[in-house]
Image 1 (cartoon, one colour):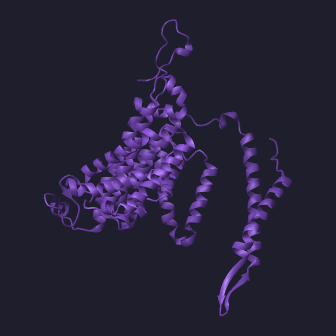
Image 2 (spheres, one colour):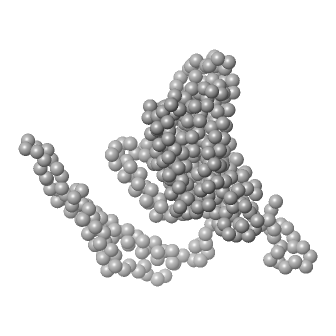
Length: 442
């Protein structure tokens, strides 16, 4: 076995450059500090902090370089069979097992020993982002259409619920469907002119659409309430069954029906199960769509649009359908968010929401539904759990994101499972060559 090769001069030079850059940044940010005294502000130096920061960066960069060399040597010494990537079958089985375990955990979460009101609120927040990321995953991950303004459909769904519910007088579930359809209609109208664009140009236009939507909501006070927000008159419920303390006219009260005592935690649990069922239904619907011709056309469009045209696939229809499907899921999430909060305002639909949803899709592995679930749980829960770090929690969050992207640059689950596989069981027709012995499964 060959000895591990360490390029010490190169690593020392690399660590020295990193330390120099750290020195350049540490002098103003750490070394100088303004202190208020009786005569005004005075500058106090903290050179010991600068030295400590530079030393930490130098040693950290040096150790990271040694670790990188050691890892590269270990990978080079591994036998070829061990370096072979895991098969798609194994990845698919692992994803399915994880999906079953995740569903069982989600169903049992309200009955866990650590379950509380905070845990249920976190669960609802995670489910909201899973549904949003599932919608954006259709647009970005499956169809390859970069969308930086996805929060617009989230906002349209929320405001459609608040504006149309008093007019139509419908319950929660019908309003969810209507909100999703309204968001999909906006997506269709928007997509027809802009989907001629590609790549960065499409991203810029969708980013503008998201900001225009927020500005219109903020300024159209007669319809949306403007900065004061809009009250949502519906609460999450089942058809004919309310989970509020006082049920609306014509609806049964869950607590009178079951004899249970009303509590906020019990109401949250009911909301949680309603939304969990909706999210699972949405994930199942997307999973089924991927196996239909429309879903296969999305993935083909993502891989090569010119090849799609040559095969007779209509790129415009595929793009519009993907854009509308993703927007509809965003509208569903917006309606649930609005009904649960009982109030919506433009501050809930800023660009950072679009960036967060896109980060979930990229981090989970574009096109991977299980990856979206894992990434949404990670991205939503990590800042909440890091609240003890106060002002540094976003720094911890950013560092964790960087580490994951270094470790898994293609996303947590970057392995794409094909929607169709060639069957090994089909026998070659008489006279056919062995290369034609397989065909697409129906």
